[in-house]
Image 1 (spheres, one colour):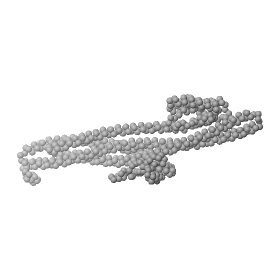
Image 2: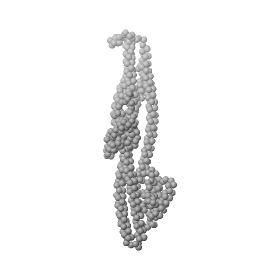
Image 3: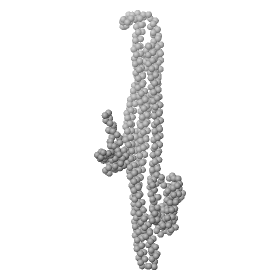
Image 4: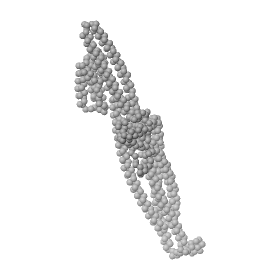
Length: 578
């Protein structure tokens, strides 16, 4: 059974939860809102009379885009669809599969991380080597260009612009003219090659910047994967804790339902025994009255016996009434505990549903990480293509010719690129400091969460101790028999003095109180004997044992329990005083 509606008192159909925590059917909640609207006042909860505002928001409606002219709705009431609880076997299988997937993802991520770090180092070393080679080639080009300019300056013959440099003219021209044409053609070829080299160098630098950004993106994805892994571990731990709490609540609920059934036959037996004793005493009293009529000489003794029998009958009636009252009180307390446990069970089911939703969200994020890992593999393939392009650039650099002006421009371009790289490195350092600050903040939040978890576990231990103390049958095991008037007055005065003297003492813990009970030798079993023909000395010793037991109960009393109810011994003493 999922739960009970607070309006129609039936099983929930399309359940919805309001801010106070009570559950209703959606149709019943709409009916409550209509009645409140007709009476011109806000709807209130039928269980706790807390006002609320009707505004259902589902996940689909929240994800819809909001227009500028449409106001955003309040979130006072949210629909809650309760799904059947999965079995422990299914949950265990899911956890095992999730752990295996997480281990596989960690292994692949570790391999990819190592490979990317190695490729990053190789890329940086190759970049430094290429820069060094380019600078060396630039200096060599400057030297060769300087010598070429000097050689060209030594010749006095120069070609006009109208001179044809075709092969026929070169074959018919004189020696100096041929050498000048060859130098001019070589110079033009060097200029074209240097311009192409500049374009290739700019493309190479742009590709290096893109690869660096991709490497940073992969590192960011790795950090996100670590955060998701930690969140998943926390959710699994909380899910295990919820399972244990649910098992404990079910066990307590079974114990609470079994205890009234176990007490009922005991009370029935006591009731039948007391009725049989009353009938026997009634027959005995009738026989005694007959004997009084027959024998007038023993009238005084028979009258005394009749009075004693009547007093005992009254005591048995009082005992029966007290036992019935105690049974009713115990039954009411158990019913309240059962209701409380059912309410806690509903809350735990709601929390379990929320944890399942978060687990689904984590699985979706893991799928996204898979896609991002595939993208990183594509990036690795692109890096290999960039390496091939770098080898091609080395082949092209082997055919470079000297040009002084182009070499100087290339040196300026390389220095500017180095400044950009230094600026990027500084920005990466700032990003690393920001990440360290964020890591410290997350560590503080984790410490606070652990402290809250410890406090919650301590509260659970205190509640378990209180429940065990309330369910301990040693305090309700025996019911005292009615003593005489003098002994009862002495017992009440001694017990009250003993309790008053112990209430002034400082409160003890549960362990200290239990050790004190063991040292004092608290009686185990029934406090008083039900033998109707016991002597006064035995009654006095039994009453003193009862007073010591009451004193021990005062010492071991739970400070978090409900106010103490009047015991059966005190009620019996008050009945005898009357």
